Image (tube, rainbow, N blue to C red):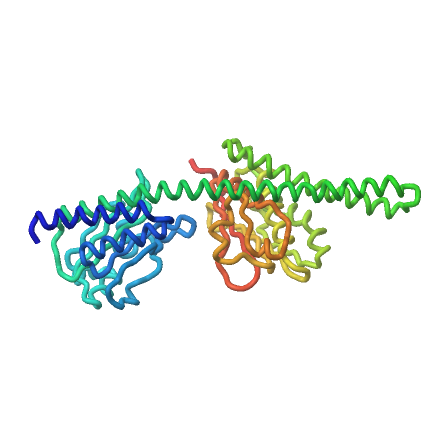
Length: 407
């Protein structure tokens, strides 16, 4: 192919990519049009676009064009650093494999040679200093690195990265507006319920006061108190969310015993668990000293226990464990046998205003704020919180905390 012909072909590919991105109605459609343009323009047997899934910390194949049956090779996702796409994403630099048969360290390269592929080129998809993923192409002939081809792919990747960043910002703005509307409607509903209960119970109390026994008066007062406590928790979450938005959700650390903090929370949750006939157990080290904010970690414990009790049907079990994991950190879990969280919901569970589909299906009240604040508190303590992957009912939250703050 002459230099002039190749230049014309490259220009046609770039134009096709630009048209595809301009006409795309979603990030997925954009990815598909980019790989199709590259495959059609250069005749490559396989073209792939891989994008980072931040929540799961993996690379996901957003689009792929193939001209042959290569099932073993066409994996849906890759760990960071694995295969050509993983290596390119991890390094943030282009990589050219002139002879896949000589790339003995890569399982994917060995699979590629099985299907008659000989050369592979990968370039990062960047947005500023952030690597969003990688473009990878595979050809049928051994070929030494060529600057003009690498430059073409890098240009397409840069154009794609800019598009994806704009698209993500637009989609995020739309999603934020939608969730805020839903949140306002939900909070209005959640505030109205306890306020209505307090108002109506107080009115009944006033009308029937002379005819009520001491026990009946206590029952009315208990209803009012319980609804007021629900409002207090809700307003506390809203205030914490406001502090989180402005970066003012602070902590006041001191030397504490986490076993004591968790033990107090478990004891306080005992009444609520017993009222649902739940078995609440705790397996804690006798002492777990660390430098942290006791009040904030008690807030974490109360929130996770409250959720576990709320989402576990009568007769279930809630289990709390906390143990020293080595010399430098603590592993703390809260597990239940409740309605569970579908795998598809888990990556979004810690987003503002988000509620799992199972909670909505069972019509269990809530604002979707508690876990957002909980994660913020844990991260302010330089720790992490996640949902353990498992099949079947129930949910397990796993927290790790450093015993000493970072130097």
